[in-house]
Figure 1 (cartoon, each protein chain N blue to C red):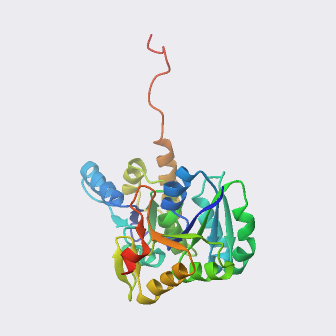
Figure 2: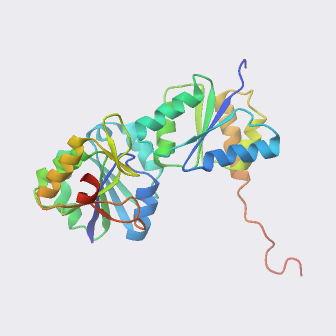
Length: 159
Length: 132
């Protein structure tokens, strides 16, 4: 089954990921691609707190994720690859060139300089451009917070 | 202890405010409990809300889930602070107990609240045939 979801979510590992997507997909592993968390053992411990024991959590830098992605995609179990921002997903997609086929924008919240695109997606113009850049590489980019929500194509929320 | 503990309830959607309202109805006052929702927040914004709610006072932060954005932000905020503790899995029983034991150190109040909360989770009902 391999990696079923590549998600951008600035809350990283939280309820929508573990329960909202994890339960219906039957997720067995979650890969958090974040250079800062990869370097912080106490943050890793905190993120493991909210994950059921049967779900493995892997912390990876962008370079480590790029090196391991083929193995995760050939894993018989179902997994989610998660980044906390657009830039990290863009770097991963670019590095693995073609191995990321779809990206789910799941939660990017308000900060100064960002505009509301959807209730759960706020993007700066640069971030919107980066998402379009990912899509230009043949990746299907859309927004959807939870599986029961409406899937919104990139063009509709970055127009 | 010079200052009673503040209790910050940190939860998804409107859960925290509902808990504060329930405590007010039962105990007649909010007893130092403050509601914080994670709506619309990334991790940095949520930490800012916690910081504003605690405002430098000794506190216990109650979160709804043992993991996720609320628990993570609370634990990260409390890291290295002797006068702030975090209790996950908030329920009304632990909040009502906390409301009347806010004169303890944060660590003691948190341990007491967690024990009370655990004790409130039970399966109610007689075994089959027990009333027979």
